[in-house]
Length: 112
Image 1 (spheres, one colour):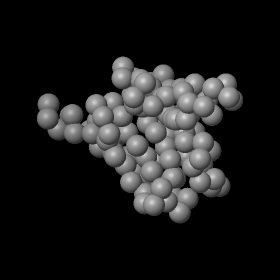
Image 2 (cartoon, rainbow, N blue to C red; image 1 turned 180 degrees about the vertical axis):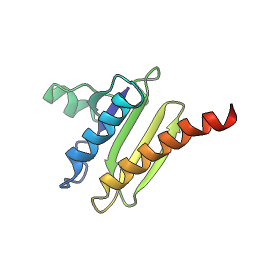
Image 3 (cartoon, rainbow, N blue to C red; image 1 turned 180 degrees about the horizontal axis):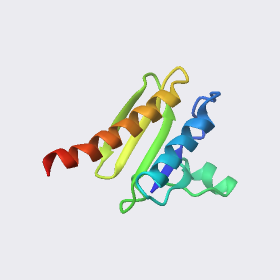
Image 4 (tube, rainbow, N blue to C red; image 1 turned 30 degrees about the vertical axis):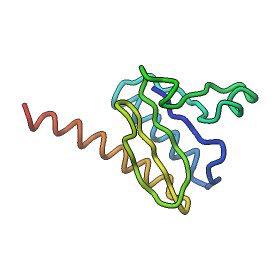
């Protein structure tokens, strides 16, 4: 699994904390092997980072994080999610994604 960062995303005070919180949750709660990556191939290559998008990692889950005009979560593929934040609401969108993962996990037990 990759958490892929847009190198052009808005610099906010909580960026690092939100990314670490999300990655730690995925490792600790979901027992996933989480790797950091960059969503821009040229930037990734020039700076020695892994490059990961949904297009080049069809077998892995990719969570792309970027800034935009609104704060939202979109499922863009079978194993692909886009977390977009506006106005430095990166912690809000990260926490919402975590809650959705927990909600989906708990819904499994309701069906059983």
